[in-house]
Image (cartoon, rainbow, N blue to C red; front, side, top):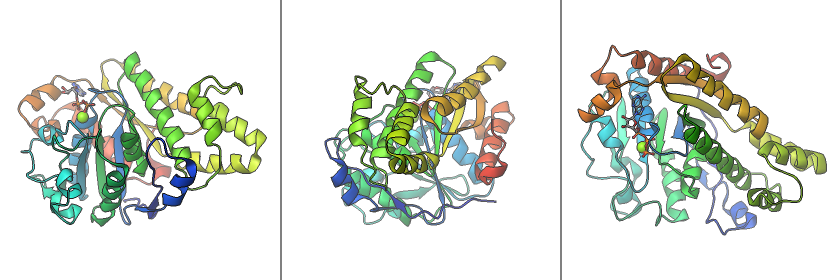
Length: 337
Ligand SMILES: Nc1ncnc2c1ncn2[C@@H]1O[C@H](COP(=O)(O)OP(=O)(O)OP(=O)(O)O)[C@@H](O)[C@H]1O
Ligand SMILES: [Mg+2]
């Protein structure tokens, strides 16, 4: 059974120097998928397997019979088509943004995999450094024209504002992490930035931007060190704002996906990240599953073939299928950690 998102609106952001007022005036401008679920795969660190995970998850969902659109949002170094094993599509997001076609559907191409279509990324002229906030909003808004039950967004590394906004747009946010200290560190940094950005962009103008700025400064006199401290501070000082803040946090649908597991004890990292979310961020995250490290991954990549198609008997196929089945289940009956 698919769980559909009925939320129509997303809160629009602006440039980093914009104030809460200008953000508030532009909010509610971006439409969400009306009858579909968007899933973003991010994680801060480069090279941890975000593209590998998003492409193989997309293929598994498609093979389960769902129509899926996979989008390359790794601005500046779009190469998801290679991981997916298809030629670089002739048209992509840049063509849509530069007005060379009128609809995002014009750059959505069918793949050889039944039920799976693909939207290619950016060319060298347009990348994350020179994409305007207006273009970003227009792109996110255009996704609501896609008639797709599942929209999967592969994000680039880093915590730039656009990447955070792509992550926050998604109904389901997957945090990819590998069991290595640098990946865990980057995942927290990414989550913290996304968390504060979500609050700033929130529909409820709760007026706590000044406090957030102080927190981001790390030099605040309030003794606020973690997002959970921030929430506690707001709840105790201004209960009404605190309630609104708690509502926003409740809507932060986060799933931890652990990649490159080499030993049983690595799996504990998934549970640790989950408990850190509770302790430091004040929300519950799911540990949606893990994928083993396997040499078959780079071997498949060298052959320009997706792993789940090239090595159908690999253990990883079962792991991807389990995660995919979990994602399509209603939240209440998911098998998560
Ligand atoms: N489970 C795995 N087992 C073995 N190798 C893996 C696994 N996951 C990813 N890799 C390898 O890690 C490398 C990086 O993967 P990928 O390009 O998907 O990362 P990424 O997070 O999308 O990177 P970027 O941030 O640069 O886009 C690839 O060479 C891939 O083959
Ligand atoms: Mg990638």
